[in-house]
Image (cartoon, chains in turn green, blue):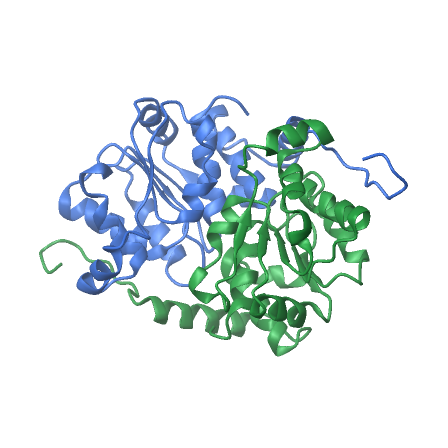
Length: 213
Length: 213
């Protein structure tokens, strides 16, 4: 790479980039509302979206971090509503080689969607079945998936260990997360309002999966 | 699904959700700085992140939309810096069954990273080789990938048809996009500052890939 061409002046070391990023976030973000373990999650959410201000919208139950970490360490599966979420999870950080499952592209999903009169994102959850029990459920895209998760929990009696509720957008995202927020009996984290998305959702899993920052 | 359990009141029709989302975005966002074709891209970027205000940071060259669309219609590949970007691209929308390539997990990438003293995200670009010529390049994660793309363009004389420059974060994201912005000879779109990410980047491809909103 030594030649006469322009070389740009930037940090090329991945570990150094992480260190500086997290230091910047911690110097700018007001994390006083969170425990140290919770703050680690919030730092990664901020890191994923580039917005320190997102901190004001992050809300979690006091049992969320502990319950999610225990499930991951026990080898429970991680159930995701979108391929982007599933591919944002860093497999090397997972403590028990946990299964990461997304059934959106399962060939049965379109027909289930027709049958139940809902989106494919919602229909995909029906294929999770019993696996929801004790799992970490990650909704990073579709409000309909979060709504349907709440319906399945009520109808089937499933009990996830933790719910990462971060659908994004303009139709149902804020409302579905408000519904989840009323369920204090379900360990969860949300990003209130329209903000959310697969990057924040998978960053939350990555934060919980390992003590390494 | 008819039983005595609570059913939530929400829109379950995917097409209706899209229509209402885009209508909300167009009613709230000031898109006057963009041509109708450019506005379609901006609407999808807003849709991906849930933030109408992102519009003020979107900046593109006047030849970007035309150049990117022509490349997609001509069947050129889409080169992505991350798996999340690659998995956010809706294959069914692509006009020519275009190849979607991400070499981040190629087994050769870690060694190249060591050899060139850069991140794996940057090193992965070296495996694209000549494919960069005429391609649509999508950087939705790593500032180092965008910097290295500019280095490769200068050193090898590659000429992508269009660059979607949307790395996110606190170290180098703003700076690498500022560098791309100086290259008026390269058709490109950026989201200035810290904002960006795989969702906005793949949404840009999805907007360009089909006339369907």
